[in-house]
Length: 281
Image 1 (cartoon, rainbow, N blue to C red):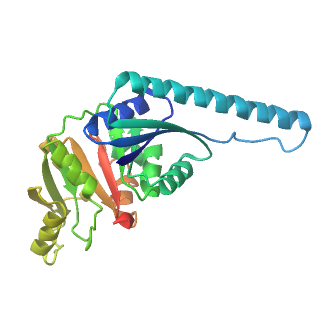
Image 2 (cartoon, rainbow, N blue to C red):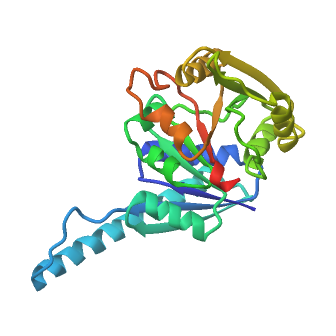
């Protein structure tokens, strides 16, 4: 059974991400954890019985309101889908979003986190420091960042790689499963400068094919273009329905997300983004 964590802030955006996850894995046996994290107040009184009681009362009120929100989301989920393959459990956490999600994922063998990402692009939003970007940089398990207009009609998936990984292990099983279940094409793209040269390219491709077997991979190379621009153009020109990245010591993702707005992959790139962390391979 697949275990999937669905963080929610009770927004329409996070509800769409939940719907996306339910549809994407409608044929899989899944245990979904719906989590809401409420962070500590900016400041807490340190003296005075009355102040401490007031602070505790506010905390308890927020906790109650959050739990009611989770109960409402659970009812929405049950009304939306009565899939017998899916079971649900709510989780209320107190603290920072990233630490709470990471801790829960580590302690509960979470296979995947699916999070909403408001805006034109997962990568564009990450440029401005969204929750999705913080989770991507923090988590070792796979994460799917879902933009507002995403659909689960998946015909082609793009996989951006620099072929530098020597051992994928079982780290790409999720990608294979999603591609197979949707009968989608998988387009592998490598963006390089003309001066760069990849040794043993055929061997690296053969290794990737073995890992993703029985998928048939299509290979593309873009040269003499910045990585950000190349991936953006490829995604738009192919009309991809999903984009896959692998973080390698954070550098690859950070290269895409921390540059100036004019250089980031950003404008109008509106597809779900799956990010794998090499540390989990």
